[in-house]
Length: 118
Image (cartoon, rainbow, N blue to C red; front, side):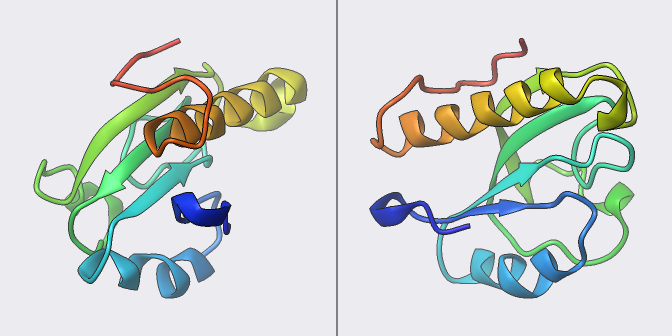
């Protein structure tokens, strides 16, 4: 997703297309990964929505991405369920909070996220 001058947020909400569009950018520029798949996340634990800064492209299955060299946590929100259907409003609110955290980190206004769990 293009968020203006502050860069891109890549949503890994269960769609493989992010791999093509965003993962390749990690090799040449800073990429933020907004992880919204609470059932089978790429980098974090199930039930957590998270925002990461990618340092290297992610190749291979998710369990190989846990090493600190691939990404660093920027912010996270505990959702507590493996499906957004359990509480769609809370899910949408958590995603919005992480987008605000991203914008705060990149100077786009909002609150900065420094590894805080909500």
